[in-house]
Structure formats: C-alpha cells, structure tokens
Image (cartoon, rainbow, N blue to C red; front, side, top):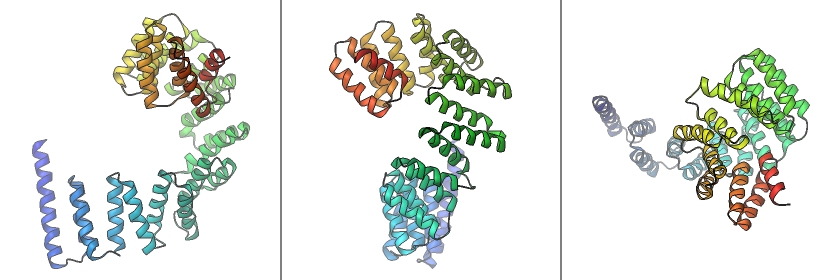
Length: 381
C-alpha cells in the first residue's frame, strides 16, 4: 500500500512538473491552470488547488473557465456558500451557461432559498437546456412550499432522464397526501407494468402510502400480492411484518421477523425490529434486549436502534438508562415515536412538564405518527 501511494505521489509530481513547464511558456493558459488544480485536488492537496485558481483569477478575474473550476472545487470541499457566490459570478458573466445555472439552482435549493432556486431552473427552461432536471427541481421547490398540486404538475412533465422514476413516485405520493390515494395507486400500478424490473420498489412505495393512510388491511393484501409475484423478497416480507404488527397480529409479525433474522443475522434493521417488537408487544423483554444489542453493535449511530434500547430499558424498569438512550436518539433524529417514548419515561420520572413540552413539539412536527397519537391520548387526557 505504501509503495502504491509513493507511485501515485510520484505520478502526481511528474504531472505537475509537466504542467508547470507549460505554464512557464504560457502563464495565461487557463486550461493548464485548471489541470494543475485538478491534479492537486486528486492528490488531496485541495487548498493548494484553490490557491492555484485564485492566483490565476487575480490576473484574469473574468475568466468563466477559471471561475467554474473554482466553484466546482469549492463544492468538493463542502464550502457551499463560497461555491454559490462563485457560481453567481459565472452566471453574471455567462447568462446562458446551463451547467452553472443548474449548479447554482441546486446550491440555492440546499440553502432553502426557494425563490432564487426557482429563478435558475426557470431560466434553464427559457434557454431550452437541462429541461427534464428543471421540471423535476421546480416540482421539488413547489413540494417544499407545500403547493402540492403545482408540484404534481411539474413532476408529471418530467418525460425522461435520471429523475423520471423519482418524479413519478413523488407525484403519486403527493396525490396520496392530498387525499387522492386511488390516483396514486393507479400511477404506481401503471409504472410497475411499464418498468417491471422496479416492481419491488414500487410495491414498497404503494404499501407505504397505504400504511400512512391507516389502510393496513389493503397494505397487507398488496404485500401478499407482491410476494406471490416475488416470493421471499426480504424488504417485502419486512414491510408485511410491520403491517401485521399494526393489525395486532403480533404472533404472525414475530414469526416473519424471526424468519428474516434467521435469513440475515447481520442485518441491524431486522434484528432491531424483532427485538423491539418482543419488548413492546410481549413480556419477553430480556430476549428482545439481546437482539437490540446485536443491532446496536452493527449500527451504533442509528437513532431507531437507540430508541429501541431506551424502550427496552424502560420496560425492564431502568428509567435512568432509558432516559439516557432516548435523549441520545432524539438528539440525532426528532421523530414522533422517539419523542413519545422519551415523554413516557420523563412522565414516569415525575418530569411531566418536560414530557408535555416534547409531546407538543412532536405533535406539530409528526402529527400522524400512530405511536405518538396513542401515547399522547393516554397521558394528556
């Protein structure tokens, strides 16, 4: 490994030497400057790469090629604010530079500046460039604004390219969100017929929409249909188990989860689901804890598994450890179910005001969470 690194370092040094000779003859050669910066970046010397570009830009501040290279390097360095400012210079100098406008739109979107992002993607439509991506991201912008019908219109205009599938899935999901679940299901069925190799993913999306709508029996029928078509597919089996648990068919859910754990003993998701269900739905707390501990060893930063650990500790009567794990989980992910569990533990410890505060916040952010709703109804009568 050391020898290979040495060879790479030598190759980079040789490449830099050749570029530097070219630049000595033509100091204003932008392509050579950009190639020098690329070599430095590939060698892990990004600060030097940025310095190379900045020195050239000090002499040629209106070079679109240099500015573009600088902006892309800053994106790679995760310096997104500086990258945005540099792309803004590019589009001022080259208003029809589609790639720069596209990158700028993405950076605005990442920074939640929806109006500025919209302007960039609409400009792409005006100049007839990257139209499929523009339709898709205009849909994403309207979705973020909560304008779901407008978002659906944009998503439905996507007719090809890498975002076609995601646009169709988002359109279906938004139809479901505004109460048009039958339209959503038909869209997904049509897509499944056209793209059968994506059947598993599309069945999972449809099942999730039914589950979110509380239509558990229909979700179960769908997963049974899917499993007749694609027997033993683990993701479908897992979702079927979760629906069985929602329908209070606990023994069947546990049997499916145990089967998954036996098939994939190193899968933290399956281990966690089985362990949590044992802890939550039966009195087999210590057995459940063993599976949760295995899951946590495989995915120590997963907040869902931390939540299970906290709930297991609560069921075993260790309220201090329960609180510690649940706070840790909620710090990583503010989720309705985690908030519900932490609130219960705090309530039992006499910290009722804090429990109420957490539940109220969770009800604003995750009002449809069934675990949260059940616990809030029970404790905050």
